[in-house]
Length: 125
Image (cartoon, rainbow, N blue to C red; front, side, top):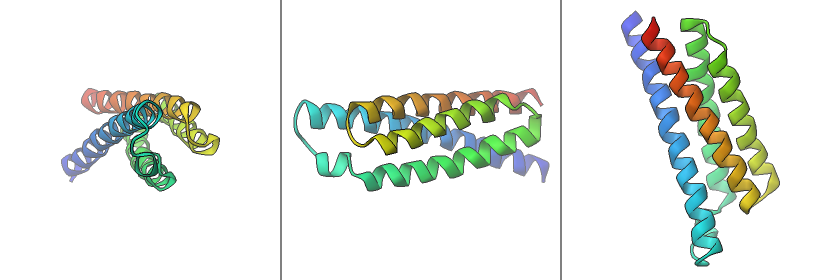
């Protein structure tokens, strides 16, 4: 049972890293394609995509980082990830454009770092 729970935790952290990377790519490509080429604005910069992504990040981040604290007792990944999720939330509030992309990329970067630290905490135990 313990191994199954650890496997689930690791999968959640890996999923969080994947979602963070996809979000960063989406933001950078969205700004480039829309800003430079004028392509795909209605799809790439859709507020619905950002809301869905943020909800997924909140669920995956909260679960995996919270489980990590329970498992290894280190609060740093949760604090770092929480700061990243807050930046992602702020990105939604500022509206479309470069500030949104910068905040989102910074946020997902912090969330990815938190997941990596969480994984290293799993490996240590």
